Each structure stands twice: as structure tokens, then as C-alpha cells.
Length: 399
View 1 (spheres, rainbow, N blue to C red):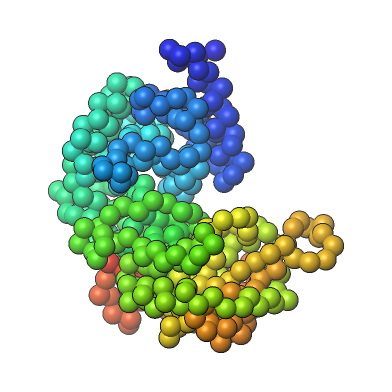
View 2 (cartoon, rainbow, N blue to C red):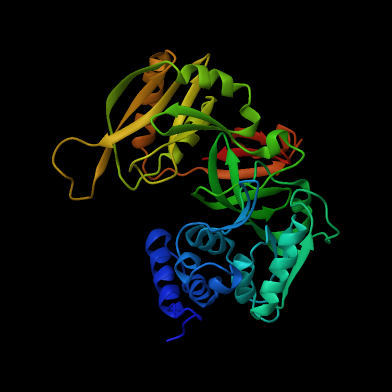
């Protein structure tokens, strides 16, 4: 059995981590193989094997108590690479390089004839990451210093895949050029406080979302955007937090004032399977033009990364849930949906519950994301519902 100098069992930890990830998110054979093969403990020196192969992020660099860089959770890495469908011999651009774990996994996926280019903004982290990769046998990753949202001297259509390891508030204009026709862009997009890893395929003048997953991914800063393109956080009490998109700054003080005036909880007759993701409901609200956000908090709940919230005229209503009353279902546990009101938000509850009921009645409906370059006129876009005008892109939903 291979161990570290401290006698820690490396191979056992690797297998255990890969098994846990496969149980949480489901991965293919190739992704699981690189999960097991990548020496994470060598790329995060100074940390125990248990930490290196654990499911929590590890802080790689901090400045005055603020996290500058951390590792990506193994489950998120697996989701990113699974959606990217990276093949042998491909050229892949990774947005966010340090500490090198995702780069090492990607290098194994592209094989000896492929190439990995990784962007890193921090000079110290770029140097440390390049040295760590070479020291562990990964020689085909080329580190490029620079911001992920700035222009670089890459050729048009140079990359088969572009994968962002952190979430962004939009799609930089340069990425459209760098990705070849038919190539895949995998990016965790933050829209209205919700984060979704979306796998886009480059088709003509648009990006078509082939698949997407709700997942909480730490943000990459976008220097040209207000607040760096990072979400606004509004405390609601009880450990709950309202997330608003960086373009929803005018809603933050309104929501904060409403949070100081909690109202009643109203329960509906709507129930959903525990595996149903409430993030889908947020897209239903967005299609109807509602001003929405996302609430996270302690305790178990439906699958996904939080509950949708409705903000209107100083009022706030949030979807809440509890175990459904009555005998247990043979199909598995269910949740009963309701609404919690703030700042007089009980007036929003009927509409919110009506939307929730309509959404729950369509369990197999899953919208498709389309993205167009910023400034694209509606006449040049496919029929669909506008979702958001983001930095670098116009996002819409179809179906």
C-alpha cells in the first residue's frame, strides 16, 4: 500500500473519494479514473491526505483573512469534466489554474497528443502551480498569466473546450472567438443569485445549452463589473441568506428592509419528490418576468442549492419546505411547499404558490439555455423567453 512520509494511506483515500463522488453526482468511467489517479496530496503540500482527498475545499492562499484561492470540491470538478466531455488529443482552455488539480485531471483526459492551457491571475499562484504540476509529472499544461475576462493572444477557434473552474456573472466576449465551432464551453453561470454549471455547444452565432446542473461554485472575480461580478448577500435571520445577482444591487437594500419584518408562513397542497430541484422553479419564475433571488440556509431540503425568492416593491416571499404529511410514499420521501413572507410579502404568496403548483405538475419539463453575444438584436435570436442580459452575453430560455 502506498503511503506518505507520515504513513497516511494514499491509494485507499483516493478510492474512497472517487466512490463518494460517484455516489453524489454520478460520473463516467474516464472521469472516475482520473479522480482516482490524480495525486491531490502532492498539489496541496502541507495538508494531510485526509484533507487533500476530502469533499471540502482547501484554502490555498489567503490575504488578511480573505480567501484568494481554494481547491475546487471533487464533486464539482467531476461535474465540470463530465459535462465538458473532453476527448483525447483536444486542446482545452482552463479558466482558473491554481493549485493545479483540475489541470492535472484534464491533462490525463486529453492524453499525450492533447494540450491544456490554464489562465491564472495571481503571479505567485501561477508560479507555484506550474512548479507543482511539473514536479508531479504533468508537463503539457501551459500556465498563462492574466485575467479570465481579458483578451489574450489566442487564435480564433483555437480550443475544443473551454472550462471555467469558478463561477462567473457572464460570458466574456473573447471566449466566443477562442472556442471552435462545435466546441463545448462549460461555465458555472450566476444569474439572479442562482448558480448553474451549463455545458454550451458553439453553433454559429450562438451557444446552445446541451445540459446543466445546479451547483454552488465559488466565484471568479470580474474586475470590470460592479463588485467584481459577485452576488449580493442579504441576511434574513435564522442562518438564512438571500443571494441576489451583481446586477440586482438596487434590490439589496429593499430586501434587507423587508428581512427586518418577517411575516407568516403559508403552506400549500403542493408536494414534490425530495430529489426534485427547486432551481427549476426559479427558471419558471424568471420566464414570467418576476424579480427573483435565491435563499440558502441550514437544514436538509429538496435537491439543489437553495430556494427561489420573489422580490417586489419592498416585499419578499420565499419558497419553504417541510416533510410532506401523511404516510411515506413507496417512491421515496416528498416535501411540502409553502411560502415565508417578509415586509408584507404575504401578498406575493398566492402568485408564488400558483407558479409552484404549475411547475410541480410538469416534472419532466426542463428548459434549454441559449446564449448570444451581448447586443444581439431580438430579431436574430431564436424564439424563446429572455432570461437576463449578462456581461458579454444575452441569455434566453427555450421550451
